[in-house]
Length: 141
Image (cartoon, rainbow, N blue to C red; front, side, top):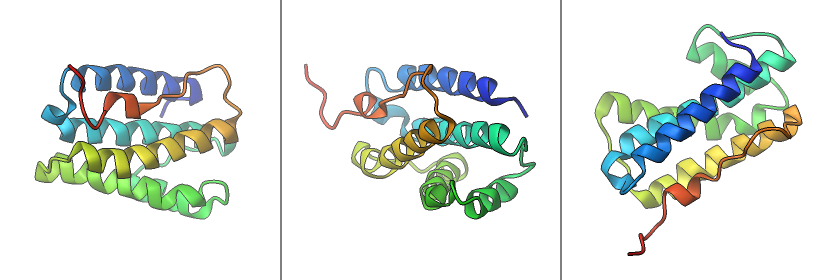
């Protein structure tokens, strides 16, 4: 598993992919947007684990247990699980999502994970991503 900076580079690439999928109309590819948002959160958690415990969980179940049991990450557990569960629904069931549900659930949880990891890792040299701008409730002509 890569080190912190590599995880952050992967997040940057995922964001660029998300830009392509959400333009011109994000509702065409909501399932892929959900998957990418989840993996961005996944890599934030992995970056934290790399820095703080120098460990890279070998499975999603082990990663979930780490989030649940590390005091600093515990508040993120429910948010992370929601992103992971929706990602699985998108990948394996082909479930689509509305822009409203993405904004009210997924983006909210992603932003909270991102903000917490930036704080915990004292990240100041990287861009925070405001995903809300990629998923407007209404497009203007």
